[in-house]
Amino acid sequence: MTEHRSPEEETPLPTHSIGMPERAVTGPWRMLRPLGNRDFRVLFSAVVLSVFAAGMWAVVMVYSVIGAGGGPLDLSLVAAANAVGLLLCAVPGGIVADRVSRRLIVRLVELLNLVAITSVVVTGWFGVVTIPHLAIVAFALGAGAGFFFPAYSAMLPRILPPEQLLAANGLEGAIRPALQQAAGPAVAGVIVAAVMVPTHAALAIAIAHGCALVLLLFQGPEPVLASEEPSDTTKSVFHDLKEAVQFTVKTPWLLWTLLYASGWVLVFIGPDEVLLPFITRERIGVDPRWFGFLLAVYGLGGVLGSIVVSSRPLPRRYLTVMNLVWGLCTLPYVLIGVTDQYWVMLAVVFVCGFGFSFGNVIWGTLLQRRVPTHMLGRISSLDFFVSLALMPLSMALAGPVAEVVPIPVIFLFAGVLPLLFGIVAIIVAKMPQDEIAHPLDR
Image (cartoon, rainbow, N blue to C red; front, side, top):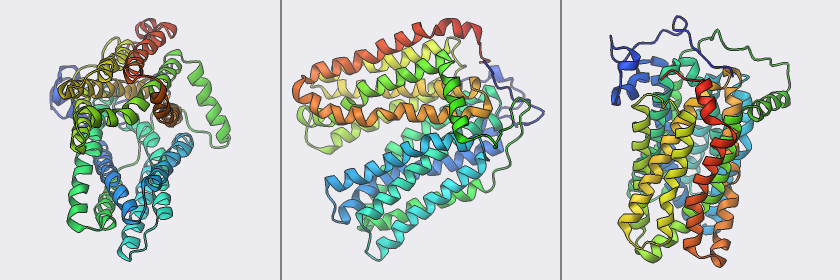
């Protein structure tokens, strides 16, 4: 297995705690250490603005559809357009990230985001915003995300030393739920209520994307790594995709974790996304704030999970810990099927959010540490695509299944099966032996 090592003489990095050896830095200081790198500060600041804008768009999109005279079907169409754009561009985005400058990709994506949102502001100002227009904008934003995040993931090991990747992924894992699920929607709700016209509130989103674009213009060129193979642009994109698929199939820990993630999504996401809102409404109350607070607590768990894992050294049994944490965090969902106590529901979603983000930070770090740098964009996009591919099916099945299967049984399977899938992946891929054979600097 090829592992990436970034020579310090090629990418001199300022330290966050001068005079402190890397292994001595623990707690929150360890998590903040990547911010000592100027290029990471610029990139991370742009990501913060972009994620915040995505959180605001989630609210503005809903009320823009309503303002255009649309109903639930129209909102589904717009939301589906975003998902389709994301899925269609995830794999091409990874191929492109391994062929051209990642810095150019993230700049172009932010420019696309700025243009798309600005079009909503302009048309809304003249009162001619339509459902098809909003669907096109949603598709563009989804497609941009499909290109942005493989490029972002592939860029990190080029600008940070290996021992700082866990902390960098932890920072991103912490700000995403905090901004996209909490702060962004909250701010957008306040703005929409203040300006009354939802599309006018899109101006704040455009400003955020514009600021992100300006920041990215100040990012320096990526260093050339001695361990990186030069990309061969004479080969077809199908060759690049085939190479990534072959690498995935021949790498047991990678293949079986992706298969595990697909099964996890299939059995868990539908009950969580589709059935949980109705359970909350029936057992706790019709006030939407009950469910909204559940989402906020889930996001809080994700923030703390990211902080905890990135504030400590990488676990020695990193593959085993990652898969077991993912499986164990869904186990309390068995209680969702039978409880009518709100505090129990809060505790369950907090544990799930904590464990999901905890494992995700380790996973992102492993891709950047153990996948050859020249194909990291493609592998990241395959991960993105495989993880999301069964999500629509899971959500489509949840409602019909609930008509014939009791809710407690559905949540029993949603809570238990992910843990069983994780144990199978650990055993079949021989992950404990792999961890011993491939120790990572902590």
